[in-house]
Length: 194
Image: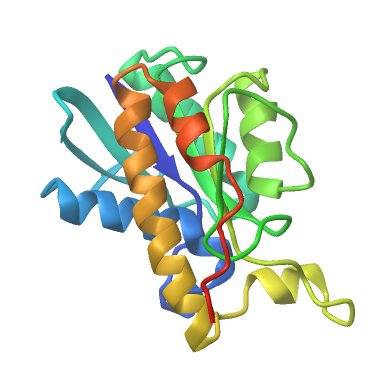
């Protein structure tokens, strides 16, 4: 069984913000595989289903981003999954262009407070993750204000494509094809021809 956790902040004011990219990918997966993510467990909204023949739990921690690790730790313990191979975390990344995705098998938090919390609670940096680019913060912006801000119309189109790619990458990952997913999706998005 896999736990696929998308990170974000609960509540209507945060919907559609850069920091909620993880939640948005979970929504794409939930719709594609007809999984209702509406059951409360370990301070998360979860839904059980099947993706590519694998049992999965889609999860949206409801702890707020900075405490994501509390919810993830509880889910990993409750469902007895191996975080190094059966947990996939999806989250926003300000170092990638909007809609670009990057898959990693492990790594540091890179300044992301949600990942920092998960690493602290799991006691390891080794867990697969899908980073979804939300664009670099303009110099004059505060990082917190930027990630809690909304996308422009053009960025929303790029993000919709990024969410689809992230959901497709998850299909590879739950069928033990992480390297294949990395080869397919860890490339720069080519700019559209004018």
